[in-house]
Image (cartoon, rainbow, N blue to C red; front, top):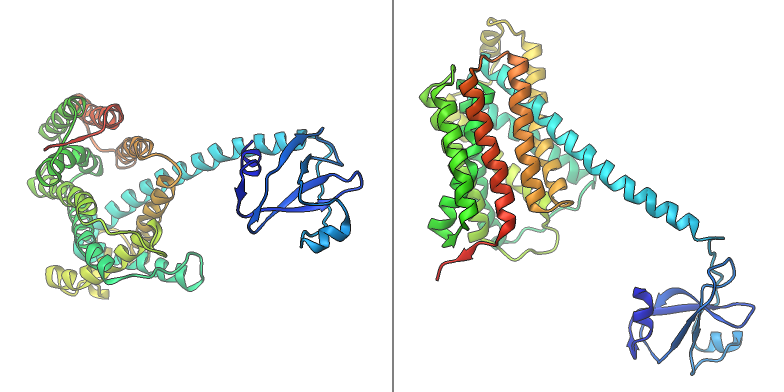
Length: 403
């Protein structure tokens, strides 16, 4: 047992607070600070009276000596049997997968709602920069509320960290803006099929800027990704070059962000965990996108333009509700993604992200009744299968750095 190994060492810190029991045996209760000793241990039966005895040569077994040596006499309650502990461990074993499964379901559900409502808003209100700034504004509001109500510790940001985060925020803002441009021009399913090309850009940028050499299995997995996206593009009914190019550009910017996060990695300091890192990026993206939206779209966040959107079949109230729900889902699903990443390995998270893309594509095709041909379906499936192979290939062998 781990505790036994700690007790048998010659110098132990943060070890025992013990209690005298009626049969003059010592019962382990709690840790106290710095005590040098040598001890021998013998286990008794696990029952309601004793756990195991600790023989300390330099200590007597009287209450007076206990007081003199500042060892507090304290009763310890022990379960009548070990069955209760087994049941608790069994319950914890079952609870963890259930909780993780619920988080994955929430992640996928929020993605579905975001993509459907976002597409509906962009159809009648085609101002991608303004919509993207609004979505980051919703996320910024949630971040400020989280810190205001102490739901998560506030970060302590240093200048070096800010200098490293700012390029990530710019790339993140551009990636999401370009994704919204694509969603406004082509079908949701086609945008996400193109975004399956992300591994290709990851490998390409890692080779060019980090000097990494992928193993042959990773290179092999890129072939079905590229071939599947090409086939889906040639057979896509909603294809146009703006939608295709902006989705490809979003892949480039998003993977540039990941490469920058490795290239400009800063030593993590107290108060800046993954949640706070994403929160700071969200706030910076909002500050970046507000002036960008004004320059690109003009002042389109006005009642006149809302009424214009309403004339296309969506009333103003419905437009506001869908835009707000999409903005809240946009931020929340990314926060849930970070929470999942903290509970599973990066490879498992990548597999989950691949399945998420499948769920979003299928749900959007069913909801919008998107016309797809057999060749288009095959190309999409081939690209997603390549992404899955890529996530598996990353486990086979670590990437080698070129000399």
